[in-house]
Amino acid sequence: MSRRKTERLLNLVICLLATRRPLSAEQIRQAVPGYDRDGDEAFQRMFERDKNELREIGIPIDVVRDPWEDEPGYRIERESYELPEITLEPDEAAVLGLAAQVWQRASLAEAASGALLKLRAGGVATDQPVGTGALELRVDTRDPAFPALWDAVRDRRVVRFDYRSAGSETVRSRTVEPWGVVSRRGRWYLAGYDRDRDAPRAFRLSRITGQVSTVGRPGAVEVPEGVDLRAMVGFPDETTDERVAVVRVRQGACEGLRQLARAVRPGTGGWDEAELAFTDPERLAGWMASLGADVEVVEPPDAREAVIRRLKGALA
View (cartoon, rainbow, N blue to C red):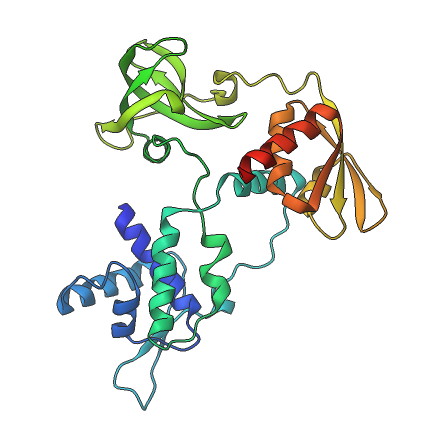
């Protein structure tokens, strides 16, 4: 499925979830990006296909016929759409928590927010939470190569780019089968198979110059079974040199942190005290800084200083 179609279907779902009353096809056409540039017949065909595809994957689109209106209305009932209560194991909750730290916004968010603005401008009441918060996703990286490489990993597609090796000003073209994009100590790396070197390699994204281009068709890359991307970018063995950080946690907050802590003790003044196992102060600092004013690292000193540096950098 193309990215444009994916965005259109997602925006259609958001639109029909957000509205408090059924919308006519014409209102949907005006509100959802991707429909507003087509002629009447093209829009009708596309809208019918989109409705059928969403229903096939289990999204219930209701057709509401009002005797006082000429056209039927469409909406998605929240009760029918929402998943039942989900119980996560501690390790599963940890994975979701880490994913939430990585993603802060996404390119889909701008179009989705625009659809809700159009609805409100047209006098249609919407539920505010649908278009904000969880849908505002964008990976927090300044490396220009990141979006293209992320898409290539997802699509299993070979990439080509110019790369400057560490300690050298020489730039060489590299053709790589991408296996994954990994973050370490605030820097992003591409791990994959370097066709020019005929061996697995890791590439720091900040050393990629110019545009990343794709080679061949999607699905051409096969990720070897059991490959350790973290080891390829030099992660230390986390089973050794494990240390314990003491962290003050605001009462009633940071449930994910509490589940991962070795111990949590009641504190005073609206705070509890938690013990967290860690090996890399920078990684711990990234997690703690993302929790903002709800946590405070007490010790060890190097972990506390790493958090302070992160926060000062964000302020700057």
